[in-house]
Image 1 (cartoon, helix red, strand yellow):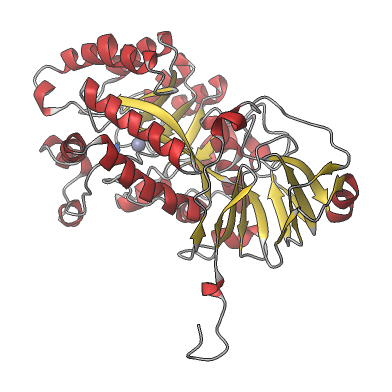
Image 2 (cartoon, rainbow, N blue to C red):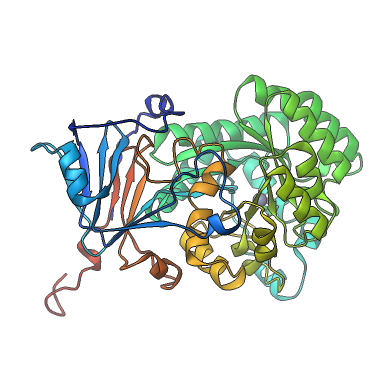
Length: 459
Ligand code: IZC
Ligand code: ZN
């Protein structure tokens, strides 16, 4: 597989934010995708996340085409129509998608992508029945990753994070939300956020940074948690906001970690500093984090395995996006998944994320998340696709420029070796991504390694 080292021009791309529709006639296509079995995308969901019945609807164009110019999608539709509307020149790069389906680049709405070390040692503890929060309370879990992350230089974190980013890109993810939260001192949190910015600048995947200083109480503040909350409010949040290192602030609101009251203080201070809110809520215990998200107008509340009926109602009324992370539930061997169907029926907009992190979910493949969402959240294949594209784009604040194949949007496009979109939530365990296009450039292309040789000895 080839991963193009091409450095995409992120500054230029961000200028397109807000452009919803451009009219083209005979604009020169720089790239043209043809012959796809299906082009699969939501339409018209850029202003508000999809809910209820709308979440289960995707547009399917058979034998369609997508034309791209200057990094943007200039036309999507029936092949003949597109060919009559755009000018194809000898310099147009034609991507033949025979046998493939075409989707918007996938958006991973919740990750902890940048961290030092790994925690495979916890697997044995888990199999012995030691709960996740007990490992944390014994100074392991998040706190062992904090030690490894503090020990790593910014450059080391960048090197490790670049590898993970490359894996995600090759699996079809083109935008990813990334949290800090393994530094837990002002300097180490800034180091982690700077590493996130460096990774964003050095490779094609776009990273959306979130400050998660309220991820755990570090050892040195264990006996005086309120002082750590004060440090977050008085020092870390102002520093992160001044340096413009994050767009969101998140809190791990959980039994034995941050209470609802502490979460309210932290997120309110962050809002005043210009950071929008996210919250890890009701993952292991139901504390009322979902209600807090509604009260504060948070963009998303994430996990939500134990959410109450009141919490669901309040999130629906406030339009808070539920970012569900079923691969974590799977890896933690929980038998209770988030009540996705109840949320969808109540009108909560649902998105999905990988939760990639070294402890509770070392998986960064959204394809696997999509299948678990189908099987255990009982979401339909169409709902799952919208949840990892347009709704995830809303959850990271970028729905005006990514998350669907619509004219004027950034040309973030994935081609899968699949006959139809249902196949994506069926062939689990195989990476079906053939080609990834980011900002109009081909950045991942499967070589011939998948095609069968002519004889046993031929490659
Ligand atoms: O490192 O365990 N749940 N934070 C909250 C995590 C999982 C990440 C970790
Ligand atoms: Zn998380």
